[in-house]
Image (cartoon, rainbow, N blue to C red; front, side, top):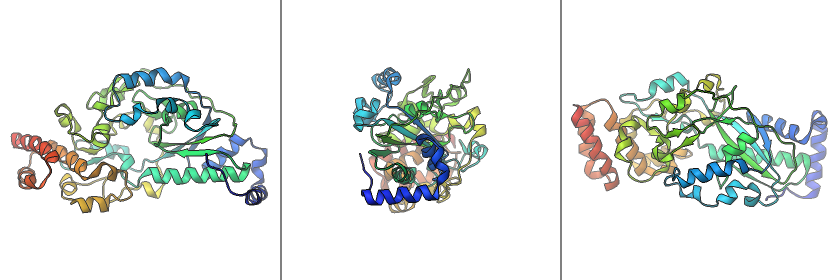
Length: 373
């Protein structure tokens, strides 16, 4: 747990805050925290306790079926993941936040899927790395709470450490977990990031929302690789987001055609979800597309040297997969691209310059292009 400042500075901050924001005095702690969160730019704040008992069996089954694939970290520290108070001792409450990230028109994203020459990059990765933005903002929220109510023990998380963030967000009323496993809200869809503050403050808790997926199976039906093996169960080993981001080995043959032009992530299940008709667009400057990634040709991406990749992707979540996996993904997409003698010649010409890892995928793409021309 982190603790805030000296007593004198703390008292000064509290006094100044009371003078400058008297409207908060009639609010409960939970209401004030939510108001501060909205002022800092979060779109929603919910609060829950630390009990995740109802999620234990589902998570254990998911791990037992090896649905986590190469994400071995998901099978480590399971007790801490399922018991927040074991991860951070003395945790009494979890403050959950929602930050919208959609900046591109959803119809334009749909039109880009399986384009014959352009690349598809998941909407969440078009701009800057959300981890840093979220972490800084969560820290600001924690600091402001400490200014108002005095020192507290806390830790901030955003897609980091053994935290079962979707389960916590569900309990905190941020939304319900859809059949595709993403968190959904009736008025805001699913295009948002999640973040958490574990704190030793005792707060009022929010009630979970009702599940409104009903009989809809749009996300299951659209999945290119049938990764949603049953409602609320995703086999990551089949998921294109996993295959192009988390999976660092050779991509299995059975999934290569289905990957299409998706070089980083996959949004299909969100793009067809009826609730995303109500999704809000983000005004965050950091989430705006960089380097033309929202409309970039596969050949342009393929032409980046490792130095260019590292330079252009600095500050992007994409940089984490490394240059070799970046090339792997693009090579597969080029194999799926519209038949083009130039692409075929380019792949053959560059063959010797690539690693054996990339060459393995080049062999497949060259056959694909060659058989199509």
